[in-house]
Length: 321
Image (cartoon, rainbow, N blue to C red; front, side, top):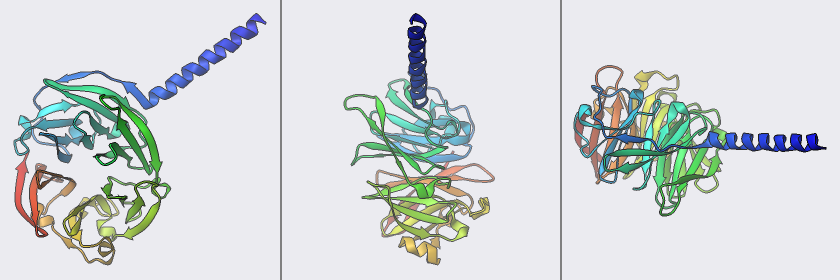
């Protein structure tokens, strides 16, 4: 009888340990402090995002495995400071003014930080975020961080606890039609989310609340390697990294008045405005202007600050990093 009780207790302890191990796969407490240090690299290696959060600019230097920050967007990369380099090819960052979440793409996780006077503190690590999570945004109307797994059709919804830096995973929403298909980003527009899907050569429109597909807009194969869809005034802009066959010669930035126009070929390229060589990646907006980075197959990667007035791109400022 005593042996049976001991065996039962051992089984319960084992089950409890497995449960603890399973939960730790999702979230691990961090707490590492990263003091301010200057960027040690000359130039950028596959930059993916230039964005402003609060009064600070953040530059995701993906293949250098780091995120940089500066109060000035146009200075050389050697003048930027390192937020953290505890990543493997990160792609994006978002913040709500208290916490900053980074998609640590090749590690399959999302990492949260708080900003201190002399650096950043790594607060939490969320492991197992689908496959190669690429893009994250903070959606102010809902108070949620939306983090997208680029290959599994899953959106991870994070929320920060009130009056706290602690973040928790509130829900995982799924678009089954996008499972196994490469999607680098998404765009929230009112009650709709748009997904530029590479493998299906289409822009998929889903309901923001239910994640049910509402419409599918085909695009030609030559611009199927889409990165991001951005609505600016009366045009939809598409940044394109490759064609459907992942040929970087297909890199472009195109725009059309309607999503259906992309499928009929009724769109125009504005890539010459961005140097005509390379792939503009994510586009962000701040202080009435827009920012992007350009990945080039040869030469130094760069960024652009630009304005749009009456649907015309103007005040183009090339940023040498």
